[in-house]
Length: 290
Image 1 (tube, one colour):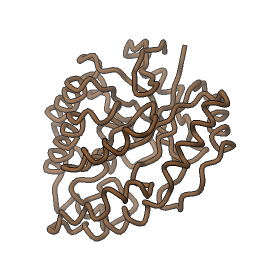
Image 2 (image 1 turned 30 degrees about the horizontal axis):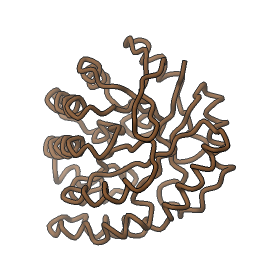
Image 3 (image 1 turned 180 degrees about the vertical axis):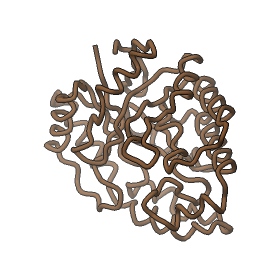
């Protein structure tokens, strides 16, 4: 029986990156084990690396009408400083040392530029790539601690935001650039939801099923204003009804949140009749008993 945490970061939001250390990865594995998690995936944000800047610098200038463009561009460019090669080398060293770890990356959706992203990443021996939608055009809607960003919810509106997010998630899945949809209903992060989200849930689940990719069950939402797992119960049921494989995750950005609420996730999945999880090696998935 296996419990996994397939969404982990080494650097907190807003913090400067630091060289990845083998000891740090070992500490993540040890902490995960205390929560019954037997395998982890390190999945740092692609945009944290200078290699992302080399192919995507200036990307957000394509949204001249967005009130968030300058803010988003400054945020993105200031974060793209780490060395992907060093990250990969240390995670490979950890794997070779026998640590229960797989090498991953969290990849955002860049409309009209995913071919560049795929071309760069295929040169690395990743085990799993997570796909995420963290921004709508140049609006980083999940920056819940920024009142300027949050004010855009009133200007844009809940239904248009959910519609745009769902469309982006569908397009991301259809690229086949990623293996797992991370926090698939992240758009609810600030607590804003349509009165009837059924259509969006159906489309999200169908996107994963049509692309043959997994969906993530994450405790991260419990640490956000929405105070709910990703995905919502109704969306989880739709994933299961369509045969979408699942991974489990904490989306920790530091040691303290590694494997956060892993026992609760296991209990939730057991109550829904889930008996297996999807694990990955060199981007090939297999089912393991939960």
